[in-house]
Image 1 (cartoon, rainbow, N blue to C red):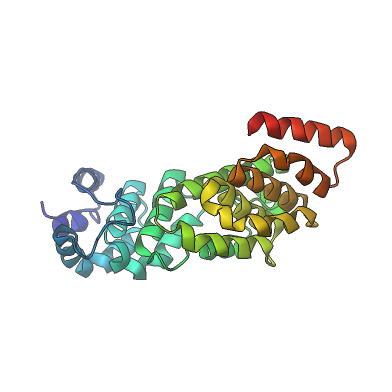
Image 2: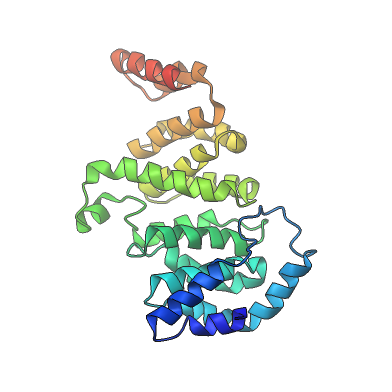
Length: 272
């Protein structure tokens, strides 16, 4: 069946019909794993795909809210393959990314799609982080949010770090890295919840040397009022520079006592 027929079948009330359609869509040759540097506008197959899918974009956006997770994921992948031609679907994609009840895999697919549909000159991460901050998303790690969700608040630093790591993985392959770095620093230094700022720093850390331009702005954050932010900034400095010789200056800036400083330096040297 052609894609138009398969998209219509995704709306079927019959679960088997939906499953077969989703399987057929996802088994087709796809371009969504190619890097952002690909010449999409010059690719005749991509142009043909967009001509075929543009009239169905409204249906695909509606399908991102379908009760069937397989249908939601399939719709998101089809949207991602349209690249910037589907930029109007950004709100639906963001809704999935921020939905803490959504399947984590589908959230990651939607995050990847957000990068795909957004021009490389336009940052995506500030939009996501600002939205997380405004709703107090548990994935970002507020202690109050964690308590409300029945989570152990002591695990929040790990949760923030892991979330930042996965966001960095998606960002690295998106072609957006250079435009995102200064905006991530703006969030890290801005008037956001400490957990949101720390998450931004963990994303920068996950980018490694690609975020080198941010290093001078990380040092002042070692004096921040929030321990989350201070430790995340220190981690980012080492992950980006890979320079263990900075361990003692960072430890002193963190105002660690002698015993803490010795342990800190030993751990950094062992890692880097």
